[in-house]
Image (cartoon, rainbow, N blue to C red):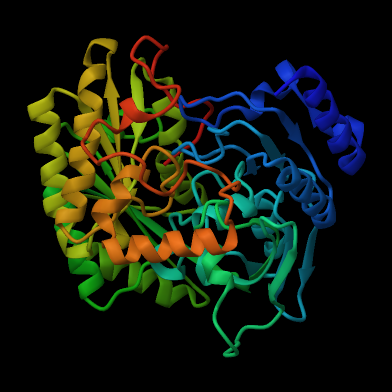
Length: 484
């Protein structure tokens, strides 16, 4: 693209969103990457303030045949908003309008609204927005929709897709599509809005979201239970869920994670404790909540039971779990944080395979996760000398999850880092149908190119196929403080 063409593009973008809301060159560097090691140059970053401005930008890019990448807070762990084909990054941070409609128990939020704001505003009215990704205080609702984000409360309450009742989407043509509304039920035609949830900005750009809210429980009770084996902790998860209990959250942390947060856990767990489960119950009746928690702790049958006796103790237990991601960032290692899920009954076997893989490869693997729904987050911690091993180790984790009937991504999406493994999880027919949907809604392939769909064989060398990933480029680390 020539300098004259560049300047022409900048002027045209400024005419649509205002000169102050167009960034290029060094000023746009923050939008060339997410929190992974991936990075790519772009033509411009723009910050529209309305759905109509987003549509105008998309139409301009379509006229010029320019790639378009939608971006929320950039907290992706799979390279989702990295502009691998260059073009224009549409930053949705100015779409931050938030309305709480108490009468209809919904919230109407611009795509750029930080997710924690929705829950916080709902709490003021005795309501809650249940999905709580670890990045809730940083990630946006638009990004959560793009990846169908989950979180710790998903055991009981479900994921983002379970709460979206309406969407406004700008299509690749620049047309504005409004779906759903402020109602709980609809059985009228195809459920088109579900196509855009989890599509990672490859089918359209979500600019507004309507989510349903539920009553905020009055009481919560929390416990942390230690186990002498990681597999024993995994097996205990099935005992609780199979015993007729339905906890709000059920989290797992292995010994590496316990050691990382030891300063928060007082007194520290004994050296023979190899894993802990953090379990929580909530509800509107104090006695029922307490009774349910005690019953679950008994079923867990752990070696060290710590039941919070106050709100302060409960917060301390959760702080240990939630603080893990930040502490992981401070460790003197390169790291790659993964996200897989398996059926509940297969958790012990998956944990066993991860531990065996760590022993055989020499790579330190630190595992935490939302065990109550089978979602595990093994983080690979390694030195520069171990870098050549990482592709094969990550690939083995993906394949093991699939062999056990699981998925290569439970809440982070495919982005670019996992796209090539999608062909192992989904049948050729399913992949073909997905591509047909992409071609129908984005026939020129301008929306978030090089994401989701495989472009190379899934040969356990996936990192080596990614633009911007070369062994001589700096350490493989996640930027920022994004927890898992």
